[in-house]
Length: 267
Image (cartoon, rainbow, N blue to C red):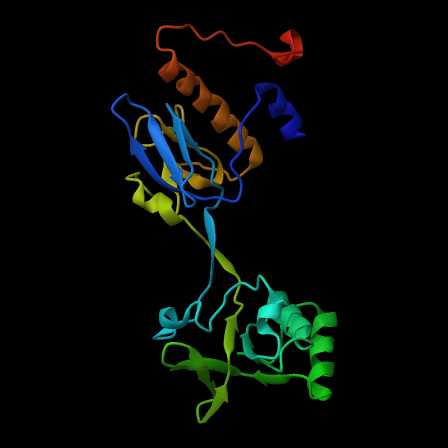
């Protein structure tokens, strides 16, 4: 249990927030500011962001940004938002199937659009969708894609291309594309760090980045021979903290102790 192992060191946690910016102060420390304005000051930064921030895969539609939060949602936080509304869901996986099934009892009209005839989701969910379509509680349009969004300040409808010749025009209050998530570096790209392919480049001495005092460990980093294993992440962290200690206490000698012999702090 990693939480139990960390407990003797009394770590602090900031949950539900994303690190947005890093600035260096005159005394050589860093200030990390989150998307909610929380600030943390430290002499070292360890980035262990996994694969990065997960962002929704968006359909390539010309004016999609215009309608985000104005009729287009990528995540369903409150199903009651769609009570007695007309909605169009696009996708062929479990999320698209499950939300279509759930919202069939909430929205006034549900249309599910999928570019293929076969779904990637659970067979049980596919069967439920087929039953809802048969009972008239849902509309299913396959071998089709959303091609156009309509509306001024709010989404009012969209066009659906089915095949090369057929175009359907559907009135809707909400369009919910559920094409899964893709990992992105997010704000990390703006921190002045050397980057590889969606990862942070580090040396293999102490897994420090090109910015002294900023380290990257785990799946977020990249170097020759990199293996994305938990074991490797622990190894990288172990070497990185040695350099962190030397940066904090440059005049002290680091004495390595083993908890199996000495016991954990406070024990």
